[in-house]
Image (cartoon, rainbow, N blue to C red; front, side):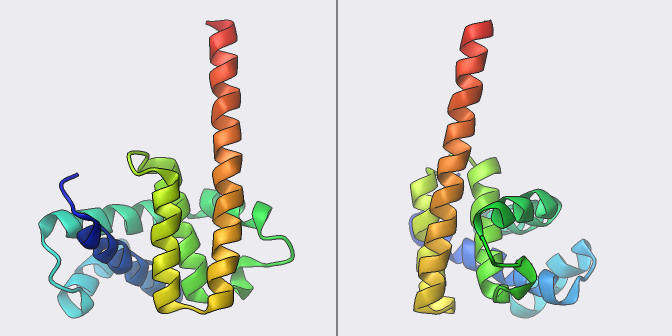
Length: 154
């Protein structure tokens, strides 16, 4: 992944905007991608554009699973009641936790918080941090449990 930090953040922001668009309008995936890059997308370069598409389309492909993780941790919050930008920042970060594992989870959280500071409220940033932190711990606990099981049976 030959992207410098600034380009990665820009790619994440583009992915967030695509996910937002998908969440609000539910276009077909091919339309989402072509309309976004033709109408709204910044000039980010091919590698960043690929990373953006990977994040947005990956999050969409795993939406039910990701939303289930959010539901488990967002006590008293229905996903439909969250601000659109906040739930999509969460979705992108969780997708990255689970499927883009070369980026450390702490970095993913920091990136999500930077983006939240730019596009959401202070309270939302704290809310996002709390949920992502809890999910990060859950995933690490599950990972360690499965490693321990594998080691014992292996």
